[in-house]
Length: 211
Image (cartoon, rainbow, N blue to C red; front, side, top):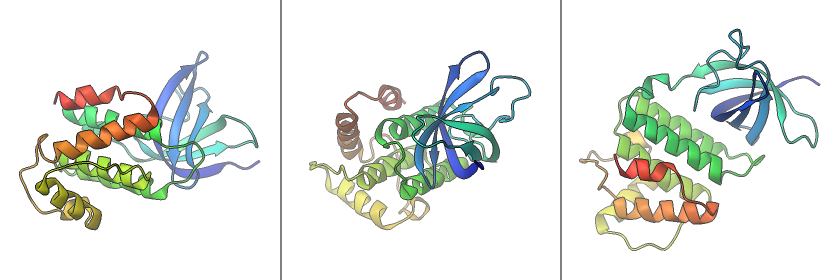
């Protein structure tokens, strides 16, 4: 069976056996998958540095019918987020993005719009864009794309921000003094909604709120 190749974001890796990793990854075409990366923990790994958190890669893998795990054969790095991980606040935001994707996206269900949302958020952060703008924009669009939008009482300013986010890319939003307090009423309501849907508290949220 020939390998599939998918544009992919690496979400999480877990040690498996002596030298292997279990990899959770989000593909543009097939949604969220999990697979075994054999020899990935050895010095001469066929995966190189491509399995770092939220690395965007072209992942090659074999998928057997009815198998829970695919077999990963290698990857080609498209975009690394290594430069973002040295700053603590940005590292927490990356962890938040990853946890939301892991806990809310169903396996084997393509969601290209969410994939493009991640592409846009990471590009925004790599270009030096505001952290809280990315957190709010990501949260708003995640809840909207998953059809979980709640009834929430928010300020007039928050309503204005949300309407603008629905209509414009993140790099075209009206300049404003973004901070953790901006649209915090909605951000917290949407996070509660996501946690209720996932039936668990997100581990990254207390870290995010402490920034």
